[in-house]
Length: 129
Image (cartoon, rainbow, N blue to C red):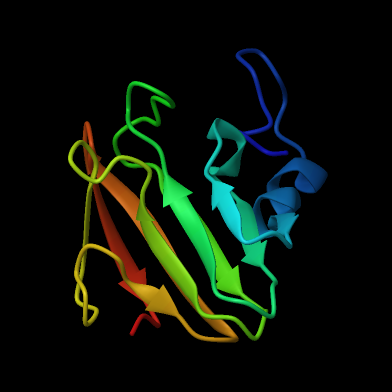
């Protein structure tokens, strides 16, 4: 999975490399709970597909130290409602404009971006309820 730009110091930029930046790598999840991994950042689309209610969990910074500015994109393609929340709610803060700011939900075919703005603070924006 992509974890950053595909070049290192001294590499020559190529059309193939630049064109590859517009594509997402898919991380297809079908279970009822998934906790974000460091490989879910950058150009990765985490798809949640389950007929039952399911959860996308954001870990504490102590567990996975995503850099501030990290964006994780989620798309719920399953019929079950997807809830985005913290693994440890007393440590990690999830904020959104949804009905429940600490646990926004995504209906089927809705997408959201989770943006890390501080050590254990994430904002969720997108088609949330």
